[in-house]
View 1: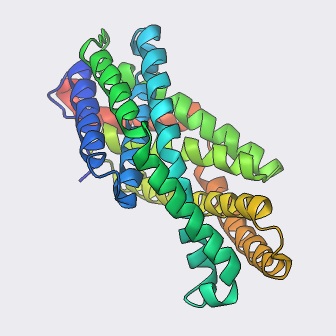
View 2 (view 1 turned 180 degrees about the vertical axis):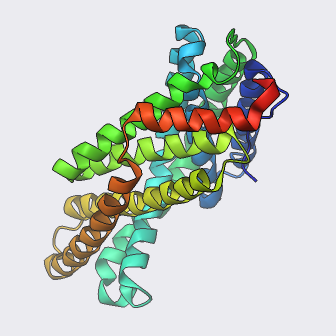
Length: 294
């Protein structure tokens, strides 16, 4: 079950509780740094934490937001190294199927070797201790958080900003569907999705359907990004395997075209309305749920 705010909580209490929950979950995952799935899940928890801070960005001290954001970015970057090595291997396997290792033996060996090397390096260097140190800094920031406002006002500007950034990123991706634009769009989609899940456990059907489509859009854009990482790795480390490289690049290109077309079609519907309109509607739904606590 996703963590969410409760009706009877003040905003500051809700934010502190949820942030501490994600911090504790991240630290729990990092007790098993040799398990790739645990590292991947820890990075997901950090993204959820960043979404919480962005939701109340305008209601907390600028210094707290800036310092917490910096620490969380640093932890995310550290965890991205073994995560990226793993997802490139997974993207290769998903793209080529069970016969991929036989069809592209040399490239497959390079990907596996790269994954093992990055995983061992992550466990051997100071990445995990440094990440724990940064998370303790964030924890201290969370304990000192102050939020004076209450009700929908606390969250309205942060949620509107998240939707607006995704709305703008959608426009840019439609004009120029480059990997960096699609990746930026994905980040904004995931932030908005996390925030909607956080704000209310009982949205009406229309909002729940929108959330399902946001999750689907995030998955499409995520698969595209993983293939872009794979392609960059092959360009850098696949030299000398030109026959294999050419065939695999053709597969990547075809798959990305399909993913991009589906993402643009879905995203154009999701981001059809301007930020003020959709966020006003979400505010009415939230207040209806929150009713006498607003």
